[in-house]
Structure formats: structure tokens, C-alpha cells
Length: 508
Image 1: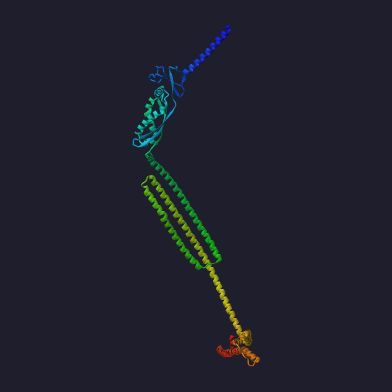
Image 2 (image 1 turned 180 degrees about the horizontal axis):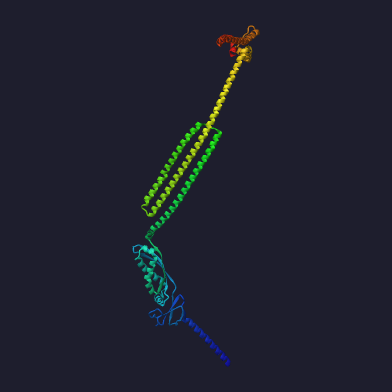
């Protein structure tokens, strides 16, 4: 081989050895170099340490490294890690208080290994291979101390000052936790269970007082609202009453004007209606009084009785219930008074309306009565005048006929007979109507004679009337009076009735 080739191969071997040596050194360095994370501590044991770290009064025999790197000799030294992270232990402990009341305390303890070397050394000695048992150990420590502290306190004290319970527990367990190398970041009492209900009973008086205050405030608010509502209703009722009174007055004036214009209505009916209205007004007043008494009996007295019952029952309860009952009593009384006032105002308004209406109807009826009286008087006067005029006319007619009869008896009598001649003939022929069979001996001549005899009765009546009138005239002239003429006329008429066919003359 050439010398150049040997040199090259030698250089290659030297270079390869150097690289291998460097790699070996790097591997050994990485194997021996250990770095502690911020949340952990390295516990290095194997070679006894004769120096003590800062804050440690004794020689530990092992080395503690935090936050930096260190060399650990393989196969000679051993490195282990101790976690400095936060840990949490749940507490659920049954305790008995100084009063002998069982309670269940639930809380949480947040702890960690202390950052100083003494705490790390103490924790390493106790938990290095049992880091998972820290929570159980801490729970047992706090359970004992918490039971001892709760046994010296009362329930009320724990409820009012839970921070005191926490501070006492941390203070009493601080020494033991320090020996374990642990520090407590936080201790919280989350819940206090009361299986006997003692705490609930403690809170009931305060809750009742608060509820009572709330009810009192609500009752006062309701009372004020009810009072305002009743006052508003009273004002409304008063306004309605005023409006009704004014309307009644206006209506009365309208009715009075209409009554004066029409002049109708009897006064007696108005007086009777007035009496009826007065009685109705009295009845309305009595009904209003009865309604008021009914309200007193059905609303006011039951309300007073209810208020008295509530007050009596409230004496056995707390002061809050007494105030609530009094508020309800005042509210009921205000409601009853407001209702009575409203009913009274309504009754007064109705009575006033009825009274005004009665006065208006009385005025209207009186005007109608006066008008009817005047009308009746006018009608009576007119009828009297008519009767008087009719009588005067009849008297004038009779006088005129008497004068005419005295001057021309024959004409008057003839006219009378001419007017009554059909009736005279009918009366003269009436006897023939009842004859079933008549036999005339002298035939047609006999029938003519019979008819002539019947018709002659009218002539006989005419002569009789003329003689009577003539005799009456003579008697009047001689001063003998009408009595003799009348007597003669009666005698003549009596004699005439005996003649055949006299029914026609009598009819005349």
C-alpha cells in the first residue's frame, strides 16, 4: 500500500473515533445531567451529603435540587422527583358540637409541598414513594382537628363566624402539616349538614320576622292603596250625585215649562202623586237606613269580629303577626266605612232626585189641573148657552105656531092632517087587516061604502080639532081659561074613541 493511502485511512479512523467519543460523551452527559422542572424537586441520594442546604439544621444525607440542573452519577446515585403541584383533599366529617348536636361538615383543603428545603426534605422522607397517599393523610389530619374544634363550639357560633372555625382548624393542624412538609393554601368549609333540623329551626324566627316585615309592608301598601281607592270612589259618588241633582233640576225646569205650555194635568192627581212620592221618599230613606244597618251587620260587624279574632289569635304568635292582623283590621274597617259612605251618598242622591222630580211633577200636574178646570168651565158655559139658545128657539117656535094657529086654524090643521094623512089612512085600514073573510052583501058598492066610512074618520077628526080650537079661542076671549076647552076636548076625544076606525084619529 502506498503511504498516502495509509495516512488517509488513519485519519478516517481518528475522525471516526473522535465522533464516537463525542457521542459517548454527549450520551454520558445526558444520562448524568438532570434538570428540575419549576413544579418539582429532585431528590438525589447515593453519596452521603455532609453539607446541609439553606434552612436545614441537620445533614440530610441526600441532595435536593429545585429549579436547576445537576449531575447524577449513574449506578452510584439515584434521582427521584417530588411534585410541588397543588393538591386537593375533600373533607366529609361527622362531628358533634358543644351542645351535643350532630353535624356533617363538608369542606376542601388545598395544599402542596412547601417550597423551602426543610419542607421538601420532610415531604420526601414521608411521601416520596407514597405521593398518591397525601390526600388521605391530609384528610385524616384535618378530620381529627375539625372534630376537636367543632366539639368546643356552638352551632350558632359556627354559623355566624365560619371564618373562625377555618382559622382554628388551620392553626391547630399547622404544626402537623409542617412536620409533613406541607403547607395549606386554602381551607374552605363548604357546607354544614344538620340532620336534626336544628339550624333550620334557628333560622325560622329570623325568616318569620323578615316575612312578617314583608307582610306588614305589603299590608301597609295595600291599606294606602285601598284608602286612596275609597277616597276616589267617594269623590266619584259625590260627583255623580251633583250631576244627578243638576240633571234633575234641569229636567224639572223643562217639565215645568212644558207643563205651563201645555196646561194639562189634574191637580188632584198631582196631590195624590205628591203624597205617593213623599211616601216613596220615606220608603227610600227607610231602605237606605236598612241597607246601612245591613252593611253594619254583614260587613262592619263581621269585619270587626274577624279583626278581633285575628288579634286574639295573634297574641299567641310573634309581634310580626300582631302587626299584620292590625293592618288587615284597619284595611277592612276602611273598606267598610268607604262602602257605607258610598251607599249613603247614593241614597241621598236618589232621595234628592226623587224629591226634585216629585216637585216638578206636582207643578206640572197643578198646571194641567188648572188648564183642565178652565177648559171644563168653558165647555160647561158653552153647553149652557147652547141649551139656553135651544130652549129659547123651541119657545119661539112654539109661540110662533101658537100665533099661526090662532090666526089661521084651518090652514094649520090642514097642513098637520096632510102631513099625517098616510098614517091616518093606515090606522083606518088597520081593522080590515085582522079580518080573515069578509062577505059584502051589496058587492062593490058595499066595499066602497066601507072604505069611505073609514076615510071619513079623518074628516071627523078634522072637524073635532076645529071645534076644539074654536072653543078654546072663545074661552080665552071670555076669560074662562083653557080648562073648559081642555075639558070639552077631552070629552069630545072620549066620545070620538067610540066611533069605528078611531085608532087612526088617536094616532093623529
